[in-house]
Amino acid sequence: MQIQGETSVNKLIVLFVFDKMESALSERTIVEICTVGNNWLNYMDCMELLPRLLDDGFICRVSSIEEETLYSITADGR
Image (cartoon, rainbow, N blue to C red; front, side, top):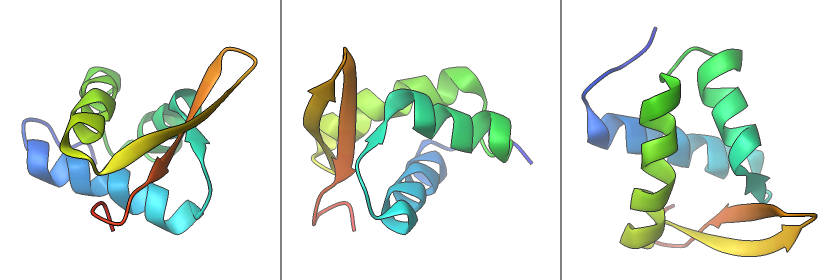
C-alpha cells in the first residue's frame, strides 16, 4: 500500500526503518526496503525524503564506503 502526498507519514515510515534496522543504511538499501520490498512508498517520494530528513536533523551521514554513503538515525529522529 503506497502512501502518496503525505510527507509527514512518509518521513515516519523511513525513520521507522532506520530505527528497526539499528545500523547505518545506504540510500539504496532504504529505497529497496521502502519501495521494492514493501511497497510503502514510490521511488520518487523516497528519494526526496532523505535530503529532507538530513536537513531536519533526523538522520545523519555516518560514512562513505566505496562511493556509497551510509546514513543513521539521530536522537531527534528517534
